[in-house]
Picture (cartoon, each protein chain N blue to C red):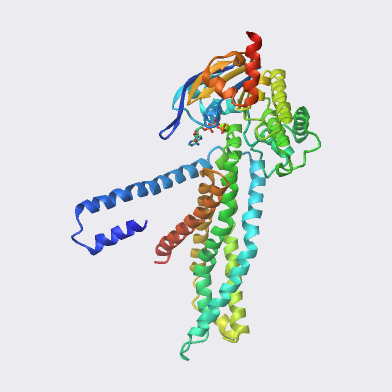
Length: 255
Length: 278
Ligand SMILES: Nc1ncnc2c1ncn2[C@@H]1O[C@H](COP(=O)(O)OP(=O)(O)OP(=O)(O)O)[C@@H](O)[C@H]1O
Ligand SMILES: [Mg+2]
């Protein structure tokens, strides 16, 4: 479980996060939604410890990040996995090299043990027979799978995904979403996902946080987001004609 | 920039230029100066970070070997090509400028040796390297920055500066070998141009090469090349690592990195020459 309390982050005069508090639960897919530029990536990078917030605390199962020693922070880092917006695979390494990288860096396993683990996670994300390919030879969806494999290879307790299905077709997007949800449940991970994709929200939004202008505007589940009267949320969620119609029908049915 | 220069010129040319303008002039330069100072500060912080929290040796070893291949071995061709022709041109130019029959013909060999060893091999080659190796370093690190690969390293708990920059610094310690080869090829080029161009006899040229030879000049040249090697490895890394933006900015950062690397090399060249030979 990750607890965030009153988080502030700015860049120069630009105040991006203006005091956000939230709780992300274990074994659940927690979603952060909001318009482009609303600070989702910044928020996630604060959770990862890549950005130092000016104010506020983040606690990981009771461990408050700002109070940890450098060595404890390093240990905590190794419990985190991250899937970046653009996959961020290392161009100079093969798929196998990418996934093996954290094992190679931080464990004392033998080559064959590492290979077994790599093949296991690659199979888990349904990517076989691509071990020796380079990232430039992969499709967007395959890159995402490699990125997920690399993020879970160290058995993380916390998994962060920045728009894991951006740039994918709706079907592949849902496959990736479901994959992340399955892995989250299977290994009881605290997963936080950034998204502005409404399909994801409906599909895997067990807990949703809506960011707007640096504040947490709304919080709830995918069931509740259908019924909410919060105008900012409905404007955002039902920005497409299709969803407006769906909501119309839903409300009519309810009345 | 231009207005600053005109301001400054006015200040010098016109003694009656009033105090207000002097204040304006200073006020304008302060942010620029602060910028440079803060860049030097963050550069120093970067260098300190590079040597902290080292990467596991087996991984580091393979990174260093890869960089030696890329930065040193990969530059050999262009360096040999340029040194050869520069050496030749120096010999021809010297020969053409000797019209007085009282000047001994061995001056051609002597002048070629001196200019190649003292300046062309260490400094000129370094400027070439700043272009070739420097732009490679800035663009490869810059691309990793914009595609979040550096963030990915940091998230995993890897010291990305050590991982990316340290192997380049170590690889560049082999740079004096490149300079040694440049010296040899440059002089060879001079000899070929001098002898086969009919400007000098081989005996005269070789005599000139041996005339008043000061071994310290070679040492001086190697000291310079070690310093320049460090600059070539780190200044472009700095520009790549701290860049912001996208693919277009990577290109701009490479250009800026080349300009700054050259400027730093030229300034250090002056300082080192004053210290070591002056
Ligand atoms: N490193 C940085 N330095 C300065 N400003 C930044 C930095 N990173 C983000 N910002 C600013 O913070 C704001 C939020 O950016 P962020 O990337 O978090 O948006 P986002 O919600 O992830 O958008 P998207 O959905 O397009 O990815 C933007 O206005 C951006 O300009
Ligand atoms: Mg984002």
